[in-house]
Image (tube, rainbow, N blue to C red; front, side):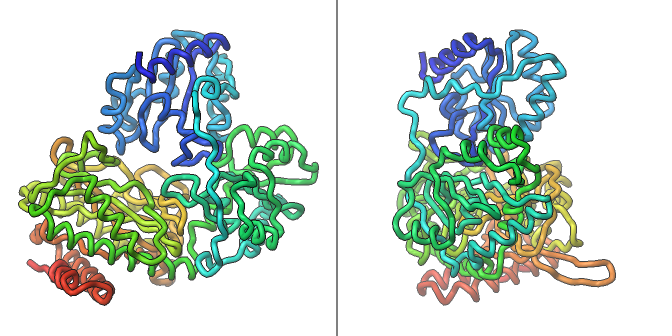
Length: 596
């Protein structure tokens, strides 16, 4: 019996003992992080599926897992041979998650169980309302994992450090005032911070508890009466303790958060985000009558970068652009001459970034997909899948860096030699969509979902599409995925505001053939104001050539060609001074203007 099968068997024994028919397992820590520390990657541990998004369900006689289009091919591969049924979200044939669960409970009976530390208050409330109508019992504190996960990883113990104001641009005291002012608008005198990036931003600290994300496992509480960071003492050295003390921030053990909230005085009114706070924490405040639900103001404040952060990001993308150009020159000079594969080029790109000042690490695991592997949206090469590169076809390379003054995220689809007509055609369609977003101008109050179709239109006209979003928010030396803004077909009430950084990354993925994505970082900025109000647009931040060897000029309009040529002039003029002679000459060629 495989380890996964044995784990499922043990869980079913515990489910039967407690009268449970269905157990839902997300991949979340108590902070509801997209990328949790290893200790809380329960869904990955129980199923073998390692994607960042997905939710598993175990019943008395079935196991199933849902995930989105980024992981369709990966999910099929990683779940192959296991008991898990893989459901692809968004496809017509895929059953709705909760409808499927209702059917299974009707068949097998028993209660529905979740771990309320791994679900938001809003999601838990939805589950309770939905299944209460059906007369189904809900168990909120079911956690069999602690009993069966032998040698489960501990909570990370990496040190935290002060994020200096020369990078942050705003002191903790200034952020505290803004947060409390925002809380007061909700008739609150305190705010609970539970998302790790919110805590890091508000307290001006950074950590290393999550790969690629400079955050720490901690909770924050900011109030008129008390200011506390709940974190393990061993994570704080003398310098950081001195900083926290000077800021009048108390340090309490991580697990004391529950006891502290249970003993709040009655006059304490705590602003709590029902989407970003786990159900158990909200439940404590709810039972005491100490809470008011509302969106965390930290999320929106964090998403709008101040002048120091914007200036830092501009500097970071220059250094990142230098690393990318050095890498692209290297791969162009090496392909067909020395052995190259997906893993070796990923390592080389990391080395190129590591040579740049203020580099701390990658901002996510590099995606290097050659040929058919490029069609796997979130592909990660391993020893088994590692493909040898040949002087033909396309290499999709999605990567980014964490620098002390900014976070970067860039995708280039690189021609390694001879391309097919289809590859060139599709590359150009994706580029047209990218340029449409880059040049978009829109009124104040516009949501990303209202712009998303612009990027897809060149593909839609030919019966093609992609299923992931066109853009996501990007943190400042924080998580590479940051809300509330995005550019996606999925509706979001968050409007695009000046100072927000987003990605612009349309793509096309043809299973077994190729994948193409072109991604730049952008900054929302104000453009004009007139009798119709304010209008915004995107300033492209990323500095790296888009390879015109894969472009069909005839498919581009004069204005699209002008955008591409202007972009390349800016790339060349900005980066050339930091390059060696050969690299500078290579960049000059890659940035040469095109025309019909």
